[in-house]
Image 1 (cartoon, rainbow, N blue to C red):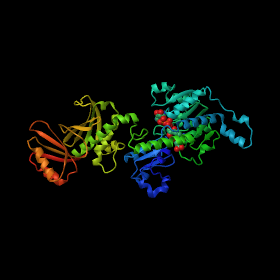
Image 2 (image 1 turned 30 degrees about the horizontal axis):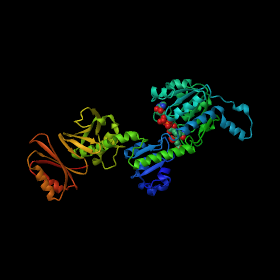
Image 3 (image 1 turned 180 degrees about the vertical axis):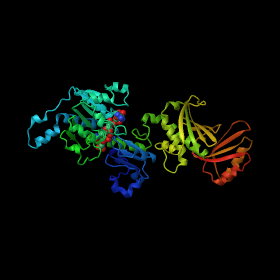
Amino acid sequence: MAPLCASAQIDIVQKKTTEAEEELHTFDALLVRSATKVTEELLEKMPNLKIIGRAGVGVDNIDVDAATKRGIVVINAPNGNTISAAEHTFAMMAALVRRIPQAHISVKSREWNRSAFVGNELFGKKLGIIGFGRIGSEVAKRARAFGMSVHVYDPFLTKERAEKLGVSIHSLDEVLTVADIITVHTPLTKETRGLLGTENLAKTKKGVYLINCARGGIIDEQALIPFLESGHVAGVALDVFEQEPPGDHPLLAFDNVIVTPHLGASTVEAQLNVATQVAEELLHFFEGRPVTSSINLPALSKDVYEKIQAFYHLGQKLGLIASQFMNIPVQELSVTYAGTVADLETTYITRSLLAGFLRPRVASTVNEVNAAMVAKERGITYGEKFSDETHGYANCISLTVHGENKTFTIKGTHVPNYGDRIVHFDGVAIDFAPEGHLLYIQHQDRPGMIGKVGNVLGAHDVNIATMQVGRQEAGGKAMMILSLDKPVDDEVLQALAQIDDIETVKRLEA
Ligand SMILES: NC(=O)c1ccc[n+]([C@@H]2O[C@H](COP(=O)([O-])OP(=O)(O)OC[C@H]3O[C@@H](n4cnc5c(N)ncnc54)[C@H](O)[C@@H]3O)[C@@H](O)[C@H]2O)c1
Ligand SMILES: O=C(O)CC[C@@H](O)C(=O)O
């Protein structure tokens, strides 16, 4: 939290959400650990909210879909507690096979029963790790130091990464059948809920030990009971439960089930790390810098962000102008990247363009977070293409909007140290900066048009800052894009539209 406390821009209110009912509508940011449930209902009471920070890894206490729908960025602190969670897993493993908690209770009860607590060594045992991300891989390092062999199952782990981490990948069945001890380190998802249920538990070795320091529900608690009763499972270590706290859970009655109250991340170091990580990210967000640990935005490193920043802005302007020009229902947006921009992380630029396009059409907040979702809701599809056609510019972004009976194309480029330029507008080569109050005039290419437009604007006290003209061919379709010092009202638009040979007049705000 220290980075937040040090910031003059941030006022911190530390309360339970239930104690802050009256102020909920005022908050811009919400920071939570795992206990606060960030539900759709809570989000409805927080219309000002822009970002939710989870000081920890799992975001299962946050309705990420509901946040995304509202354009709220969700960030977490993905690695601040990795070491603590891995160490806790290892402590649980040692405690499980050496029966330390049971022996502890016995001695505290004034007994001295050494023969009752004969355990097993970890050395030489096969450890099955299901889920080989940050924590799983740290557990593996520690296991190797203890002389264990490590057997990994993770369907998303590449061969290269497995080799780099010195482990071999196995199928789930292989891990289940060979492991003496199995520890799970996956997120809780539709696929992992009940992953160790009746069917898979039956495939494990007789006498297997199980550990869950990830999320309650990955090991099916009900399914476990008969396997403990029969002695097939020799012992279980649980830091997490399907319901927390677990209350009077039948598993707690088993002597060989050892438990902790979700303590994986509960170290001074981890709490400091996650709080600092999430606080720094939050400050970056409000300073308009990239957030690297967002759950609902593509991850961007500072380096990548710096490269795409200019195009991100250009994309937004292209979308914004196209949306106003095509103020009719549209079905499809097609974005083409050419030149240097084509080598960058274009997903983010496309999202920015899409948000710019949707903004004039949508009453609710629309930004890079929810743009794809809002587009889908409105039946607008979009796609990215890459091309070699740069039209002579170092970089070029083209947007084609397909609407009912009309297609519109706009192209832009970014010139370093100069700015964004629109270089092609509705079939006409032109060159203007997409900034401020713009006026689009489409007319027949005739002498004297510029003077007539200037006279009307002058008569209405509208000052022209810049004027760019372009045409398809001499005497054919021509256009003017004017940048004005103030927005024009409907009266000015009508006066301009009455000039002979002017076909269309549109205001465009950029
Ligand atoms: N007990 C605690 O206090 C505590 C602390 C921190 C994290 N956690 C939890 O630990 C878990 C792991 O955290 P992490 O930081 O290592 O996450 P991570 O995202 O780095 O790793 C998760 C791994 O699981 C793999 N995976 C996903 N679906 C899978 C499936 N169906 N089968 C097998 N593997 C699958 C992913 O490919 C990934 O490699 C999470 O559930 C997290 O919430 C608990
Ligand atoms: O806030 C906590 O202590 C839980 C942490 C842990 O479960 C996580 O997902 O980061």
